[in-house]
Image (cartoon, rainbow, N blue to C red; front, side, top):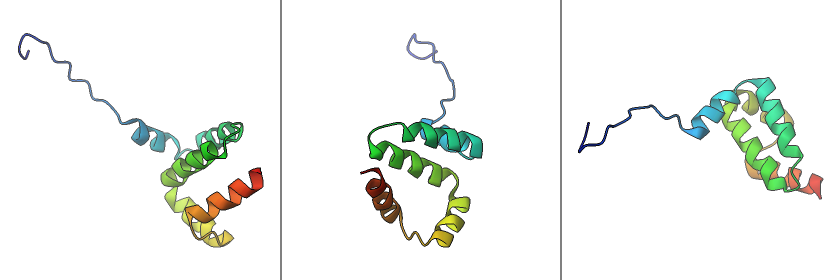
Length: 84
């Protein structure tokens, strides 16, 4: 008790940290990306893709090398052009 207030010591998990853990599962990541594709704003998909890339960094690095994608910005331009 502190100053007459009972302190609740629950551990809070950062949303982004939890999301990145979930996105390490390929099936979850696939569903997450598919949902983002339904949005009319291509920026939503790009944000979603950025999260998946952060979660699956090792897998994405090898895919990027194989497809000659040099940066996130390069990939963003490809996606935006394909949606217009």
